[in-house]
Structure formats: C-alpha cells, structure tokens
Image (cartoon, rainbow, N blue to C red; front, side, top):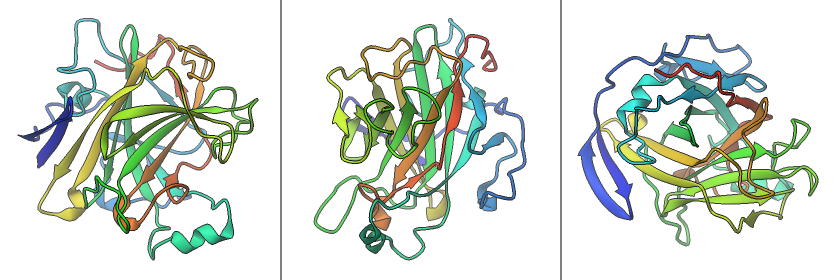
Length: 276
C-alpha cells in the first residue's frame, strides 16, 4: 500500500510498512446481534459492543513516536486493536432520510487503538474507504471522523449530549484540513468550538489496487489532564466514548453519518499496562 501522509500541512508519499509484530489483543467472537464484516476479520482484533469496557495501553517511558501523532508509527503494531460497528445516526427529522443513498444504511466498522504516555492520551482510528474525499463542493463532500466523550455519566445521550447539564466533548477531524477541532455540545444545534484547542492530530490515506482495501488512518491526542469545563476528564473510573464517521463518496455530511449507538466505556486507569 502507498500512503499520503500530511505533516505540518505538507503531503509526503511513502510506502506502508508491513506489521512488525502481532498485536497483543485477545480474540473475541462477534455477537450475533452485530452485522459483522467477515471479509476483513482479523484474529488479533477484539470485537467491541456497546457498553463494553476497553483499556488504554501504556506506552513505556523510553518509547517515543517518530512524531507526536504519527498514524503509521511502529508502536501501533504492538498495541491491542479493537473493532466496533457503526450504524446510521437516527435522523433528527424525517426529511433527513432523503439524504440517505441506497446502501448507506449498511454497517461500517471502526478500528481503534488507545494509548497513553506519562502525560498524553492517544487514539488511533482506521476505517475502510475506497475513495479519498478531501474537499466539499456543490455536489461533493469530504471525509471525516469524530470521537465523542460524555463529560458526566452514561445517562448522557450518545446523540450529542443531553442539555447543558450533561454535555459532550467531541474531537473532530475532517479531510480538508490537517487538524482536530475540540468541540462541546449539549444537544442538537448547540455545537461550539472550545476556546482552548489542545487536541492535535495527523492522518494518512493508504491506497491499494483493490478499492475495498483502501483506508484512512487518523491519530488524535491530547494532554492527559483536562483543561477547561468542557474538556473531557480521563482521570475517573470509566469515560463514556463513541465514534462517528462521514464518508464523502456516499454524500454523508452533518447529521447524515454513521455512529456507535450508545456508549463504549473507556478505562484509562494507571494499571492499563497491556502495551509492550
């Protein structure tokens, strides 16, 4: 595979490395309740369903990424990988259904990895996408991905929060700019860009002669300690977390997206030492 990697706004072409080692993830069979994509099942990937708890791997103090958010660093070959199903987001109004393309209701899978150093938390995301859509025009839309965290407990709605008392913090990457926006929301129409932008990121699109094997890889990271009222606090037992993806080639934008329905529970406690 060939990757197009964006670093500091510059496009660099390079050949993708083969995995240097197997991940340490245990193999779990997918539940029959999830529409699984058997074509690319990997025995070293752990299947995650709503309400499952996932652990954050510790990066040893003497190990460093080549650059802070490198999506193709060798460290990712040594960390557990998870996979979860994404389904169409419930429409906020019936008219939204008019945007859905034929076949857009099928399940999409998100692969993700979680790691932390002494002072930073990393999330690496990858998903299959046969086309690289970087721009939005009159009739074309860009690709994008987001991670969402409930600032409080699991009674927060996974659909952008439950009012000002139960908001969410979202990390949003879009293909037309090499940065991650940190946002907050407390329901539909309330999305706000936070004054402190402390989340960074980098992306790579990997091409392949077989379109079904092409994929995006995105890394987002932030200092482990929170900074501000709407900055998610990772220093607690578990953090409700979810994902969203927009596939531009299928005209996905705004509320027309695929999401995790309900929450996955993130455990970033210090005893998460399953990374090597």
